[in-house]
Length: 127
Image (cartoon, rainbow, N blue to C red; front, side):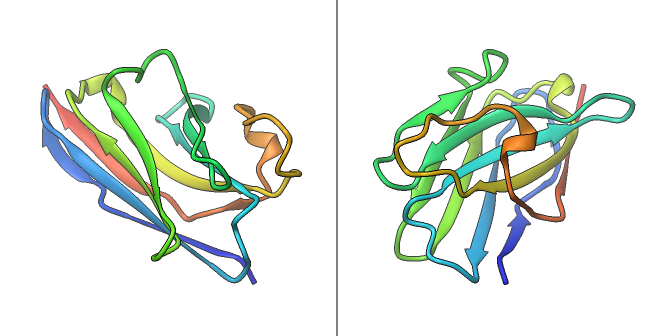
């Protein structure tokens, strides 16, 4: 059974940093894409960033480019999202997700492409 467990959320001031982690288990993830999405109150879930476990290629939403960095730790089967220069508009519940599409497929930015989801972790950025 696939499990994705997020950690690292919290409260931070504008301009601060947080590092989210997603520990994956229950399957071999070497061909998966791992993504981060977020959902603010009253808004739809939106793509933040994703990484292909096979070759480390990445994709970012325009709103976070240059501020957020996604990475993977092969030994710990963990994906990280380093978030710098945080803004109040980054406030949301952040979800980790896994896409089991074939390794040759492109990184997906639509949430419906992802098969497995974590429970989410709250990130709050105060102004």
